[in-house]
Image 1 (cartoon, one colour):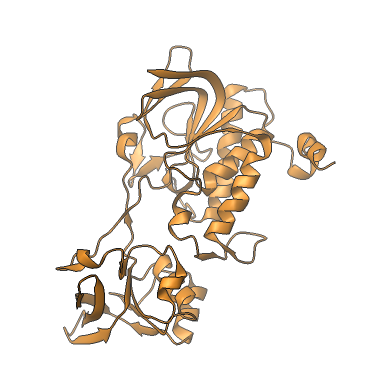
Image 2 (image 1 turned 60 degrees about the vertical axis):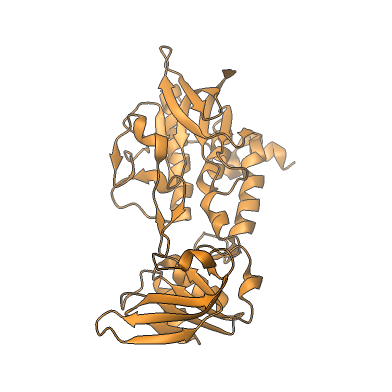
Length: 337
C-alpha cells in the first residue's frame, strides 16, 4: 500500500477542461491543489474530437478541441498544482479528522481536506452500431470518433446521428469530403440552431427520418450502406467510403456509485454551491446534476469557481466568499511584472 502522505487542501478528480480551469481558481484561492487524472493525458472527452471546432466559449470566436486543451493546461499550471496521471480513484473514505483518503486502482492513496469531482460522464463508452457484421469495419471505415480529418478527405462520408456531435462533424467534414450525407431518425436535430441551419444550407445530403439498415463491404472496407425510411420502410442504397456513428455515449460512473453520494439521472446531485450530499465533496461539469443546468463547457467554467469558493468556506468559514478578480489579484499581478 503506497500512501501519498502529503495533505492537500483540494484534490480535483478529473483533468478535463472544467477540472483544469478549477485548478487555476484553486490557486487563486491560495489552496494547495492536486489534480488526479485516470488516463495518460489531460483534456478529457474533448480529445475524443481533437479537430472539432468549438464556438461557444466567451472571448474565443473559434478554437479546436486540441488547441483549447493546450491553453487550459498552460492556464491550469499557473499556480503549479500537483498533477498525477494514470490513477483511477475507486474509493473515497472520510477519516476521523475530517480529511478524505482517496484510493486509486493501483493501490496508491491520497489525502485531501476537500474533493472536487470533475469526472465528466465517467468512462466514455460509445453506443455501438447494432447491425450484422458492422464490427468488422471498426477502425478502418466505421468510426465512433474522429482522430484525423485526413482519412475523410475526398471521401463519401455517411454520418448517422442528430445531436450536436453529428451536426458539428457534418459541418466540419463538408468542405473536405467528396460528399457528406447525414441520416437521422427524426425530422428535428437537437444540435445548436445556428449549426443545424448551416448544415441544411450547404451541400450536405440530409435524410430524415431515416435510419441505417445495413452496411455492405469487402474485408475491412465499407462500400455501400442501406438506409430505411422510418415511416414508409422505403430503402435506399448509398455509396459510402467512411461511416461515422454519433449515437451518443453511455454514462458509466463505475465505482462512484458506491461512494454514498446522491445520484440523480445518472449524475451526482449537487446544491447551487456545487456541494454534494457528503460535506467536503463537490462536483462540477458534466457529472454534476442540478435544476436548469446548462450543458456547455462554458457553464462548467463557472461551476469550478463556485465549487472552489464553497470549498474555501468549508475549510475556513471566515474566508472571503470569492477570490479577488484576476485584474486585481496580487499574485497574478506579480507574475505579469
